[in-house]
Length: 333
Image (tube, rainbow, N blue to C red):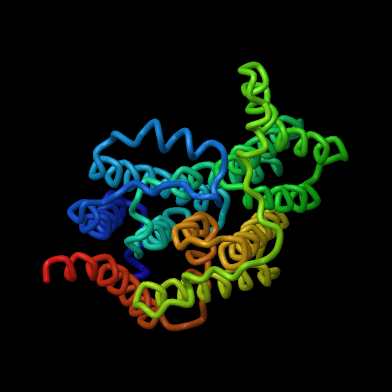
């Protein structure tokens, strides 16, 4: 099975698309609801939720799936273009679809779904630093995207640490890049403040950011269910894959080491956010872009025999499908 997805023809892309469609299909028939933002989410989500609340729930589920799949195509292209996987591999796309679709909690139109393309764009901007001579604008854009993510989900402001660490590994970077990235981070909140200032409601601006001081373990992982077991297994696999890519030093170019360092550090940072700063299961979606890249790399470079890797991929796909259809089977009963 690994050899099948190590190709990049229409058959592989169609197979991944149908797999994703199979995972999202039950949610379209179970009277799905749009995720309502709570105190954990940022300023933009309330506006987006109320502006789309009249959309039919099935349309919301289909839209979420299409946005996820399109984002997965960019993640797969990112892996192939920057040497993070085989040149024609579709393994990153497969793992992206599985990571975003194995749980029914992920099939809603939510904050995390909207954040996925922005996180992917952040990786693209960071990788371009290695090839850009005048990369001040890239640093600003990376900070700006992080600022947008902060408006969607405030704990994602921690990704600015990834941006700053990434700048240390690229050539042609000066202190200006660090300053301009911080300016970019603050620019989206400044624009939002300016809007409220000119509308005479600037006092309301501070209420848009719900910042919790202290670490709270995500209680969703304490529940006993097949879904929570799969979440735990995915967390463990993603942690292992992050550590593995950070350990890769031999047989890699300097720029590949920089890329893997960015992805590995990002994944560890997002794992921290998910486990200790989040109170919802759906925020595990934020792990998908970096997780798909590290999982694809782990499957490509493992020393296990091909048949065991293919068996593992098959079990992951089968478990994801079973978990997606369990609520549907319960409704039928």
